[in-house]
Length: 118
Length: 113
Image (cartoon, rainbow over all chains, first blue to last red; front, top):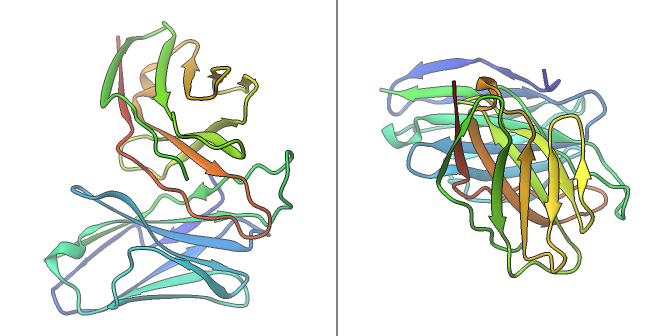
């Protein structure tokens, strides 16, 4: 158990709909990352939040948005869903560290949410 | 972050050592080598990382060549539960809010009885 909790585990919805995926990071971790894994694209970084603020953006569509709340949990909102959005969505968290030789920079991943758009 | 090259697949007999190679010929002096694995559709799992010295933990050993252009992840006694996709990632270690991981296609390791 990584300590990162994602809900729901499975989500089935129809095209055009909107869904929200939730992530609770490990206790004390300030960074949350969202990744998408589809069969043809592999694991792709979507977006990162650090202590409530957006820190980095990857290949995230405009139809997708995310936020991190004061209690550090994060939500990924997917709207106007298309068939191609069907994928596994993973959340990861990491603690804030100083740089240097002792930093580990490990990301801990949740079990993922499997989204099926029909 | 530097690019890595891994074989797409490997087989290993149960109980034998699994040696997974990774080429990172363009690695910079401040970049570390990380290994993660993903067991079928589960979330990726951190295994080990290193800069230039060989590293060992309870899961695996990491051997980095002296020129740092390649490395090998060693699972000393592979079990069926080690069947997974193994990702070699090269990245700079950052303070504060680290950067994201860039996953390639990895090596699918199949451990056979």
